[in-house]
Length: 227
Image (cartoon, rainbow, N blue to C red; front, top):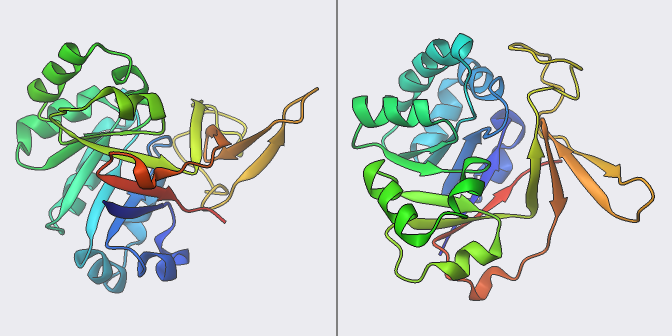
């Protein structure tokens, strides 16, 4: 079982990165984070990443940003050898399958939310048709459902996905540029008239869930890093 960590600000998380052989970068929720990370990537950090396996997280993309986002992503892909693109956008998945068929591709949250509810035959067909290497989830029922799977399963901890919005809670609007107030930060939100809590991280909402993953049949445990 491999272990990985996902960071959305490499410069502030180098000590954490050094403890893992597999590093996730970018965001599966916000389209602003990965381009900023790639623009600021210096030679020293790039050399660190070249020694790791890299999971590149990408979000849902709208038409106005697709071309620019993909151009930066491709330039970065060409600098590294051991990478897997974690996807939420079918358009980007089709683009990569057509132009980079040999690059490993995985499905991350929130797109995997729909896949885990497909019947087994339909999911296996999707995996084959779209050349999928892995599916990431934080749902325990999904892991128990598939015994003879034709893909790798990545388990995300400790934040369980609840919902995402294009409306940025920090900028107070939908925007294609921002001040990046969310990087590596999280906020605890109290649920009204309840003792429950939610966590705001980037433009997404989670609950924190402790999981005993040692006995689970998964290929990788992926931890979200936040301060």
